[in-house]
Length: 287
Image 1 (cartoon, rainbow, N blue to C red):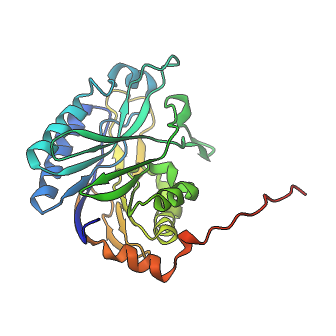
Image 2 (spheres, one colour):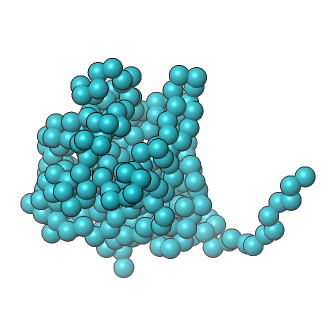
Image 3 (tube, rainbow, N blue to C red):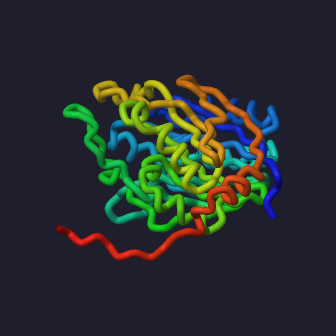
């Protein structure tokens, strides 16, 4: 049975293309969140590295077993006695095509990895005539949804662009999730237009708390000075099951700590039990 409450800490970062520098910025924020009572701390997507340079990524990224950021954060979770959701790490793989994994990892208070989720949906979009992304060129998608437990609370793990695929969140909620995690490095253009609206919609549709730690600002890339700088929207959010925003972290790095009243999940779902109202229907005919 899930506890009645859980205190969570969301980390907002502006990482660059140097994993050690990023780690040195991340660990103090995790410690601050733990010191303020967070039982579960969450970091954003790409906690170890954000770089526009695929060659630099190939030279820098390590496998899960060799990644120094993961090793350090596992040690930190153990030392602090907290649950830690590493929003995602960019990791090398043994895939024949050389593509990386964008992987979220849940770490328990003993420092053990208890769940892994590889991002399902790749950010292959054209934002404007001068800005486009092809995540699938460098990262291979995952192939399964993941429901995990942290502090005895069922958690559905997702990453960033997954947010635009509501059926994933519905299935996670119907499988038992009470919290949905959406660690992100959201584009500023689409972030301004869609970020809060989509997160609130996913919370309302599922009757879950939605936790969305985020990257923010302009990401330094000193190892690739000839490449355009990448920016992220920020505004890490906590949304309750009724769609109310409990935390908005703004646009600067830092921490947000909030206690979740998990009984709100049951109240929202009993008021509008739409998760139990699915009906089969025929697919639309193409006119």
